[in-house]
Amino acid sequence: MDFGYDLSRNGIKSFKSESWKEKSFKPIDRQTLEALTESKVAVVMTSDEEASSAGFLEELLVIPEFQEKRSLTVIPILLTKHPLDIEEVSQLFPERDRMWRTVIAKLENIAAQYSLSRNLAVIHGTHAPDQAGGG
Image 1 (tube, rainbow, N blue to C red):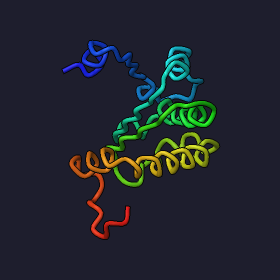
Image 2: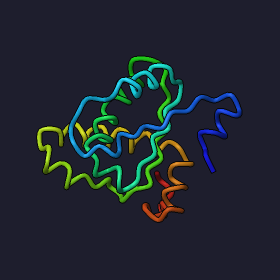
Image 3: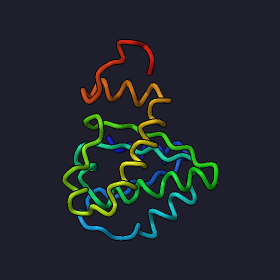
Image 4: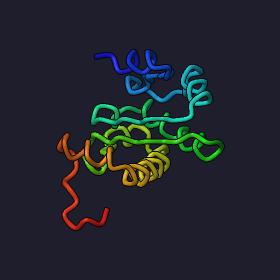
């Protein structure tokens, strides 16, 4: 099933970034920046594979900037270990570690507001269900 095709069939333009494939450090590509500029909603989905990618982590840095500058709604869906494990890539780029950890914390806080994200993480087996009911 092609989720992007289903969206476009219903009049919703979608964009899937390929930044998670980038293991090296480089600027965000023009196509991704244009897609973020034109977007009203950014659904950020993560898996353990993306968490080890410098390209993906760099892209995460710009998404909250778009959210803060204009009306971009960010919906993170975190299908990863909790907390997001970036140790390996942080060792390769230690100067970026603090910024990456800060943006991940922001996204985790946003994700906590969306029951969809929490429920998918529980189903995926990456987060334990909240037993205390607090969040």
